[in-house]
Image (cartoon, rainbow, N blue to C red; front, top):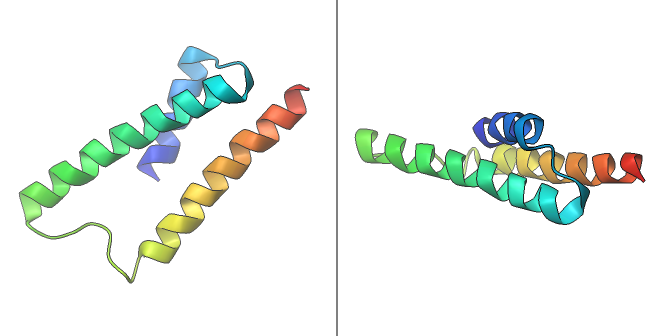
Length: 76
């Protein structure tokens, strides 16, 4: 969810045009979320992503990617 929220905010700020620019923004959002995840794991000593919540994470990532693709189609 953090990656999605970050990517949304970056999209508003950077106003990417086209799929290539949207991919760069999505990767940046994922990088921010990854940094946060690693920080949480270092602090707690436990993994954030487990086999129990991996399916939910996969759904969030899939929805994010599909949303970017739909936005691209709408701008055409």
